Image 1 (cartoon, rainbow, N blue to C red):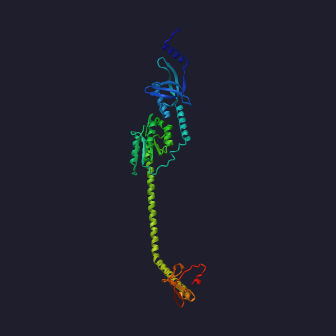
Image 2 (cartoon, rainbow, N blue to C red; image 1 turned 30 degrees about the vertical axis):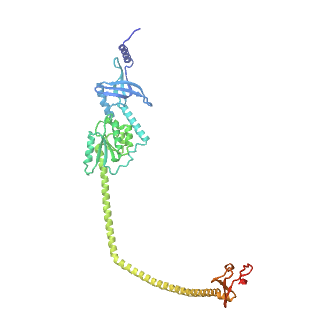
Image 3 (tube, rainbow, N blue to C red; image 1 turned 135 degrees about the vertical axis):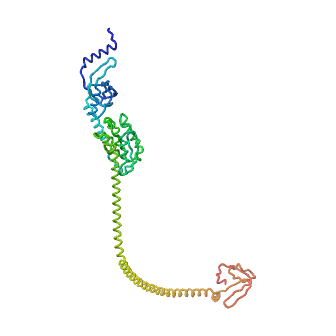
Length: 443
């Protein structure tokens, strides 16, 4: 059995590949990793469209001579730098090295494929934002009438940020503004996350600000990739304050330009937009002030005229009013006199009738009282002891007390019996109680 060294085996593989894959191939792949200095080294991958799992992987390189030609051509055509995550169509030659193994040597790149893929991804993001119902949310927010407190997302060292502040604070109208910088990286791989974090910090104190300005200024168009991010676009579209974008790129709109409330071309234009908005509000207030002053002056003049007319009519009106009131008073006095006379006559009639009733009532009362007196007198006469005695009755007393019960008399008592025409004195010899004897017979 023949034994091979590893080098010999790799050499056989190399020769076999050179003989069987001696031509070039156009390959579609995604850049997974990339490092460029003098030469450019990449890792290319292919992913499953549904699961995004990596199905194939290969190392690739662009040698310096070729890289110096392909890089500027690609960037001029696409406006983008080659970067990880980008879909590319490359012409490659399959190579195998005994030490470094399998790799693809890139000899050409088709920028039109990348442009198409970028456009496709861009449209997919836009359509997703529309499907989520957030694409126009920020645009639908009303701009505050007082746009004075401005939160700015930019790099602290960016020239665009300085241009924005200079334009804003040195406005010819002398308008006052308050700005606060929320620093963010505006280029490179950290841009997307950095801007989102700045938006989150502003959202935590949203009540302190009227609008948000995202400004970038000049720079390579390849740095705009971060502003075509789905996550960043969702944050801008759903932000609770109006967002103004002025990222210094006049040729194309990024996705956050499309979903922001207002897109302007440059940071200076963003400042000018805010100034013009405030000037319009100021002019409207001044117009309203003029209108109020004019209207107030007209009302005052009208009232003065009306007051003069009233003053001129006042004497005649007073005289007419006085005459009318005097007539009314005379009528009222006449009516009062007639009413008083009528009431006096009526009251006199009432008094006369009352006197008549009083006389009749008095006579009746006197008559009744005389009858009562006569009856009382008759009763008194009837109750007089002498009247009773004249009827044949007598009154017996013992020791000065009238005898009403036989048990009050005992033998030997001295009795006085009063009759109508005298008194009989007697002495009791005996008593006898007889219930059958009537009081008249006993007496």
